[in-house]
Length: 399
Image: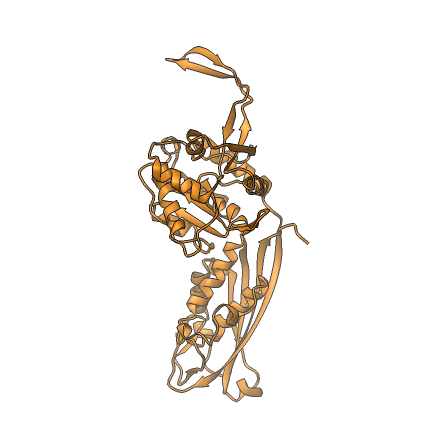
């Protein structure tokens, strides 16, 4: 999301750091083999929550990390391919900054965020971007409210005055050229990027953070985050979509219906594999999401989709549901033809569609009917299909 300053629009990027292992978390975790940012939170990886919090406010999001789970955790979201992180946090940030600098249109502003902080109120990000109009660095933070003690060998040695002490959070925002320059001139390990600016005398401003914006550090944090996410969970609204598609029979082609090859003397004509069942299901999903139709996403004028397996289209439609935080409740497909017989293949079709959409088979219905020998389907000139889907998506609260 390009933001406007007093002079000109600014292009905003975010680095999402996922290279750390989290030793303190692993020590108490039941599944210590999985890094903390990939632990499940309300059914989704922690880092996916963090990415979704950032995406509405940035033009580009660059994940940084080496774990093979990273790409899967962010599947379906509008993010760049991950770049490898380094041995230390500052190495990972530098790698991400270099990747952003190599883009055709590098950013003016960069936000650096820990993938283990899944709950970032939008107000914080907006405040950071506003403050960056007049400051070169901005971080969210909270004032320290507890009394602080210095301890040596379990004995208190001093009480630390808490006046003017703040707890730093992420995302931290910076002018991109400055932060990249500082990272290339300094290789010392620091716990946050604001320290680089402080070291060189640049002013770093504070905006008020949030108690919900906690970093997953120990296993007890995961339980607290579950409560926070559950409390902040948006109202889910039902959406219904309807699809209808027709393809004529064609000689010399395989007949593919709902992802399954069906024995028949003819196939269907079309730019892709002409799977009329999947095409109408995609249209129903896109309709429920107000995302147009299949031709908008995979135009038949584009030769890259010629003879394409329509499974690719349905995977995209399912990913689009998940990228919006939604879920498919059910899908009901009706195939209209005189021949071939659909009944013997319906169960295999259901299983294939469920696999592509990553849902249980009991959410998918496939049935067939004839047109009593009336019309083009009755004359066996082609096959028609209809689909109705029900989807639940978060209510964004906007009119």
